[in-house]
Length: 91
Image (cartoon, rainbow, N blue to C red; front, side, top):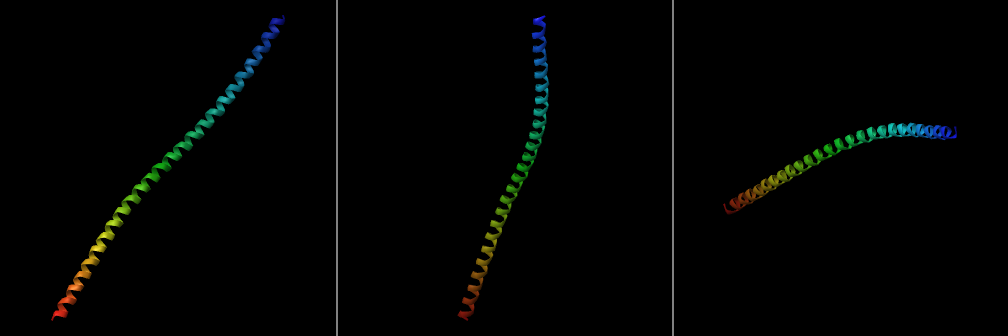
């Protein structure tokens, strides 16, 4: 009879352990779902940041090109004005 009592206690302990493990598993699955959602949010934010970085790079190139054209235009105007003054002075 004593063996049955010991066996009953051990089975009871195993049942409690199984319950705790199921609860822990449910909690871990919930945390996993939360972490997956956070990861997806971070991945989307990274894609947006990369796109913005690319756009900034393109904008920088365009602005640099525009500045170069403005400098060339101003230089041509200065040379043209200087030549015009030289022609008028020679007359």
